[in-house]
Image (tube, rainbow, N blue to C red):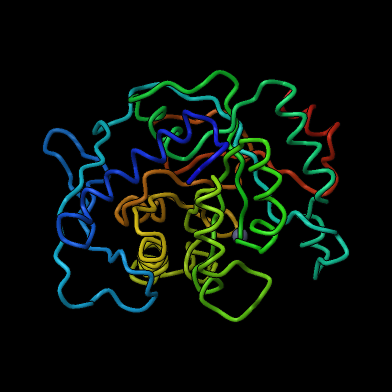
Amino acid sequence: MLRHVNPRARATIKMMALAVVGAAVGGGAVAVVQRSEAPSKRTTSRSSSTSPSSSGDTAAGRTATTAAVTRPATPPPGSVRVPILMYHRVSNPATSRSHLERSLTVAPRVFAQQLNWLRAHHYVTITQTQLADAIYGTAELPKNPVMITFDDGYVDISNTVLPLMHKRGMVATAYVITDRVLGADRAFMKVPALRRIESGGIEVGSHSVSHADLTTLSDAAAMRELEGSRRVLERILGHPVPWLCYPAGRYDARIEALASRAGYVLATTTEPGATHDRSRPLALSRVRISDTTGVSGFSAILG
Ligand SMILES: [Zn+2]
């Protein structure tokens, strides 16, 4: 698992997996302490089946045990600088189904050139866990960190992105919409693809259940999108998935608070920028990469 992934990223993913294995050994289900809050510690416990089933979580015989994934209650002051690149599709633009989709599609040849540019300029791709640890002050980032993210979970990720990144020992994150993972539209990755990309170094995060604009929903409906998607992904992958990307970047203070309550540790937006205030780990800015960015635009952005 995770062959050819840079050693630091591999270590952090492995630590996460070990925590889950520890919990699973204890009783076949996972309950995780996401983080704590001073002065009394907050414990986010939940039960999540390790079975690949995507149906309800009421299977008989499972008992929850607790694996502690503990970060400090409050992030230290200051900010963390990491460009988080936002991609959508990596495919031939002719396959795009709309003007908007075409503008969000990067050709595989251009994408490979962008990865080569990162490598030539000594950028190190990092995982969500590495960023969370840096924001909460429990670990340092490597020099020249960059996080690569893909929204919506198109099959481009398993078909095209995975081999290109794997060959270069790079890691990334794919935010998926669970209704589309479980649905019939073949443009989106399904359960086996999610497992395959993760074992190749592309972590999976939530992009909600249905890609609804969360700010238009009631608290209860927004929580169903946030918690429901996380639960499905954790059941598919067998470990915690505390990473979120707001659908269409739509969020506000209420949704940020609900995301925290739903157990997310990091959440990305579509707000532009590469410097992240440590006090807002659920409002990370990103750098949009579009069909017109190319390599020259890429180098202008990252310089
Ligand atoms: Zn989206």
